Length: 127
Image (cartoon, rainbow, N blue to C red; front, side, top):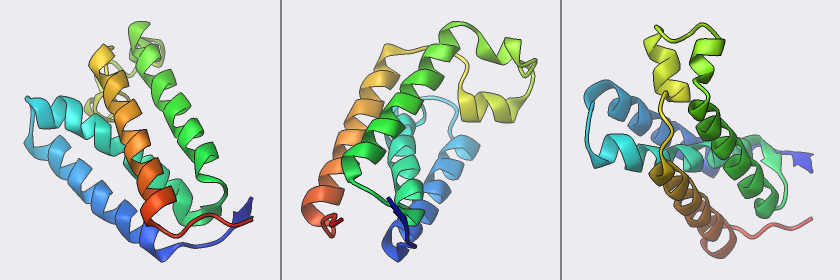
């Protein structure tokens, strides 16, 4: 693992963050808000990590997927209540508040998508 700035992934991160902010700000319901946003958020996390860390893509994909699953499963146990954040809108947007099996599928598809893009289309990883 090395620290190395990647301009392409930085630009991708900024673009995806802008899209996610627009989804959160302007959409309250529907497929784009509830499913496509989850698909994009794992791609955003992957790109943010790849902006600064040069490591095998499979490691980043695994960490992003595990983190996403952790957050989703914490929603089963009303994690925001334990943190006393149940009335904070931003916490609900960032961490979510309800568990959904479809979110897990969106995370898997998002990680697979960015992993394939990174390994097949983008510059391949070299140690």
